Image 1 (spheres, rainbow, N blue to C red):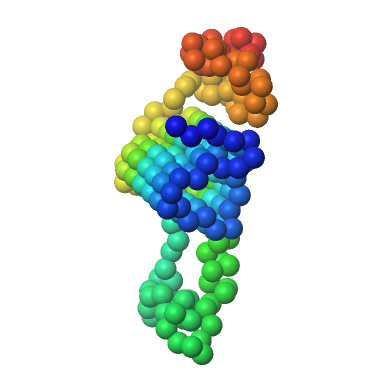
Image 2: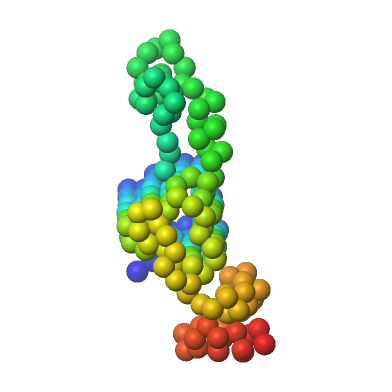
Length: 205
């Protein structure tokens, strides 16, 4: 089992990392590709995740074979093909289309803290997934997801909230994901033993 580090992500074999940064205690699963993205502290993705142009919040839980921020083809042109923007692949005297890639990278996806992205889910560019939300396996998320909402389906639609609004609001206010590492360790037994409302009563009043 990996021993996670406060200074360097644990990167499994076969990963492609480009123009991306990682906070403390992060893990990148085998064969994943992470480009133009940031991982907050404690965030991880399982194997074969493909994440582009995304901010991944602290404590995000990303299952295997997910696709977050998938890039698009130019649908309003005469052709969809790579040769329009990866032109140097095909001709020695043609440059790649830098403006196309800049526009693509600017379409950011945001994954909130303590979210769970299920196996095989797809989250489209410019979508925000709120704190504590759950994306069901195989869902295709095309619209923003409120905090602590469970969504499923194609396209993803709300199934039910994880908690009553008052509990969700108190968890947002508590923002335990911003606690220092030592405070998390001190509260570990309570994280394990207490349901959300009891945990809030002890730590939020």
